[in-house]
Image (tube, rainbow, N blue to C red; front, side, top):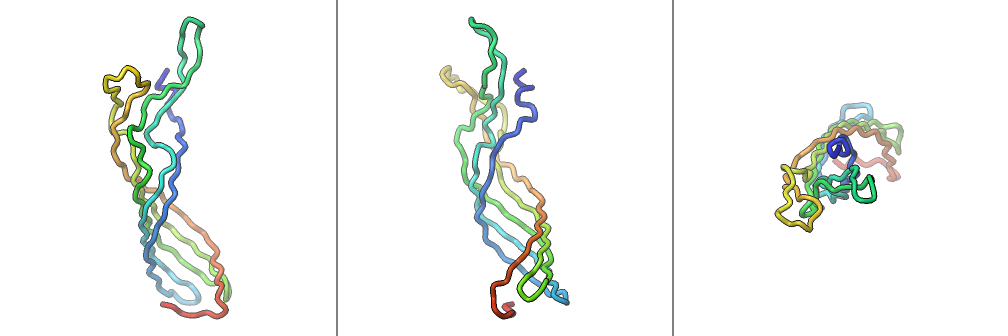
Length: 159
């Protein structure tokens, strides 16, 4: 019953990143530029990637009831991690003040995940076990289509 309660359950988390990096550009002719980008930085994690809870049916003197049960708890909540992005794309001029951008990239981020079964550490007052934590690097593909608006009065070649 407990396994069914947490099977394929979605955990709502997020990460907000602050990154800086370098871009290498090349002109391909007729207003088309290719580029490669490498970016790195830190991310602030919102929500726990460890905490696991589900609903279970319990019986007591008043009869059966459905209650929420915490199965794993994050012993030390981690809020900062590293994040890196590598990408490449094309920028095409649509006129003197607009560019359209098409970019394919990969985002890499380290996330805290359970590293094994939880341990109650012989504390009868605690209601859920602490899970050992390890870091796991995941990667997410990204596709970006953008419209760049150039706010300069005249076009200046900077690189």
